[in-house]
Amino acid sequence: MADILIVEDDRRINELIRRTLSMTGHAGITAFTGREALSVLGKSRIDLILLDIGLPDIDGFLLMRRLSEEYGDIPVICVTARDEVPDRIKGLKGGAEDYIVKPFAMEELLARIQVVLRRFHREQTVYHIRDVEVDLAGAAVKKAGVPVELTNREYELLRIFLVNKNIALSRERLLDLAWGRDFYGDDRTVDVHIRRIRQKLGLEKDIKTIFKYGYRLEM
Image (cartoon, rainbow, N blue to C red; front, side, top):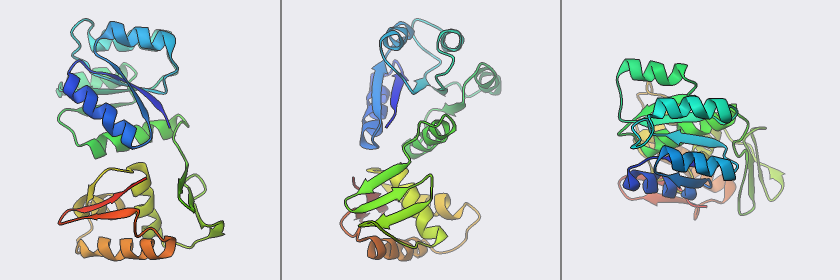
């Protein structure tokens, strides 16, 4: 679990991100201005900062420079409506690990967060679903302490569910994430692989089917 500071003045977006992070096992700490963000950082240990550039009190780029000077070891992802190329370049050259433009899909934000946390070795790597243990660092899966053999595609789907736990994923999204955008197969392929994962690991009640949409791993 990571402690993630959400610096976003739109309270609706801030709360939506916080709730999404909570559902996936992270702790979201909210700040609505640059000054509030600095106050939180002075009191709390933070693993990652999600930073809106258009803050009401401090320009986000100036705040990022100050964060770099005072808290240089904390990674920053810019989350902003400013989508011009010069802004993207300014943010990335200013020290941001990533730059995501509003509006965005929550699955995409979560995926980018996981990439940055992995880069800084702050990502959760061992997961437990009742008697199933998944070690993402070692690519190992056990049920009741006994190793379980999964195909590469089954393992990749399971990994995707874990890093997006409690988030509904459409069949199309699962195809893109596990097979890639160049895959031209039927989305029933997803159903077949998930049925095998459920059978091998006894996760029939944990990987929920969402009618006419997709699946969600509930933990």
